[in-house]
Amino acid sequence: MIASSRVIVIGGGVTGLATACLLARDGHRVTVLEKNSELGGRAGAWERDGFTFDTGPSWYLMPEVFDHFYRMMGTTTAEQLDLVPLQPGYRVYGEPAGKAPETPIDVHAGADAVAEAFEERESGAGDQARAYLRSSTKTYRAAVRSFLYNPFSSWRDFASLRVLASVPAVLPLLTRSLWTFVTRRFADNRLRQILGYPAVFLGTSPFEAPALYHLMSHMDLVDGVKYPIGGFRTFVSSLVDIAREKDVELLTDSDVTAISSEDGAVRSVQYARGGKTVVLDADIVVSAIDEHHTETELLEKADRSYAPKRWDNQVSGPSAVLIMLGVQGELPQLLHHTLFFSDDWHENFDAIFGSPTRTPEAPSLYVCKPSATDDDVAPAGHENLFVLVPLPPDTNIGNGGLDRSGDELVNTIADSAIEQIAAWADIPDLASRIVVRRTVGPADFAAQFNTFRGSALGPAHTLRQSAFFRGVTSSRRVDGLFYAGATSVPGVGLPMCLISAELVLKHVREDHSPGPLEER
View 1 (spheres, rainbow, N blue to C red):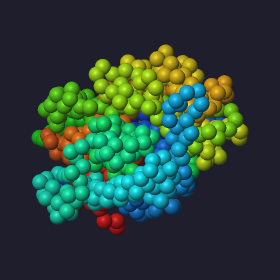
View 2: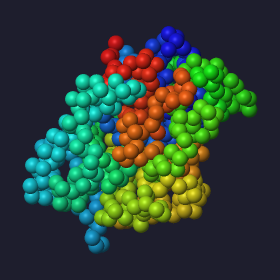
View 3: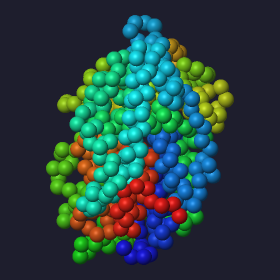
View 4: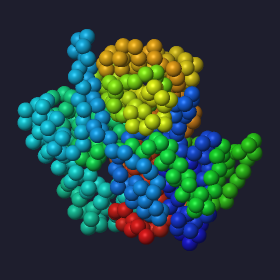
């Protein structure tokens, strides 16, 4: 690549900002074009009446990935974020068997704590939990060392000694599902669900995710969960500050409409801003937005890396209805993170991923209450709740809105979720205490972020859509065009977005090493 290239990054979400930071650090001249008026993408924020909500990610996992990125940029996590460990990491409510709520399970991090909690539910499960976590840690370390940071840009990337050494720890876990892997070791349904739920972080079901992803339990049950005071918007703000320090040009309200090539190499990006059409020449273009949108809307047919059948066959991750609630009074029944698990997961996940899709009858919900940890996200005497209802990726479900201004189905789903939380956690007056309400629906994801089918996450992490099967990171048709972000390699989640940014840097440097880059 050109020593000091003109780089255009499409998308000012976490991946786009991180990519811009890393390339600017290497001396490239970088411009970020963001469609919306705010930077951060799905890691956004919303404020009303003294409440401040993170509108996207809320789990701080894989801390070493954040640490590595900040050190790459000449700073540290401690300098940028005020992290608070959450102990217990989260609470689990099950579906009530009768009128009385089920006794919740508080999940603490650490092998000893996990083993003790599991043994209380099922005789012998403590020793099984220790073995399970040892395996998850071994697999996690092999993945980070050899696969997650690997661009897999040539056959040599597969044949490196580090990759080959990690294959025995990974290959056997690709032949069975995560749910099968878990159920052979534990009989208690709630324990099975605690170990199977991380598949949702990957945009898939535990029945379809390969057992390889039991490595996710290392993140929450071994490393534990943390929270950045001020919310995840503080993380986004740190990326923006670093980008500006590196002289990255950040342009919001700039909707990219085309990527052009000449003689097989990228040449320019066209975007609309303030009623005008602007064309910027580029040596390198990084698409850090939805891959489907880039391929089908921004590129000419001859420049596309995929045939149309790819999109017909793609298994999309779930969409969601998001519900942001300001609630009067305290809610001790809920922790910072609370999960509500229905008994019949087969019905739950078949509703989302089966055919035809439908709204689950008793969905498994996620509730975040950051006011449990952060005094500044809600007025005194109030709580801040963020509720996620997993749904099929279907824009026909509709848009959300402020108060009850959204589409009827979105409001119905939100009302049902509030009733479910109230019943399962024994908060009978929850609905009457709500003073702020906003919903987001699948159609909002499509409109705001151009996501394929209105998915909230991107392609599901099934076996055929994981690791190097997930997609290209370097265009097959256009030199100098790269793909990054949740819809590309290595996948969904904030840590994966930072790794994806580093994969772009590796491509630009023509570096084929499998692990994290040297920090210098």
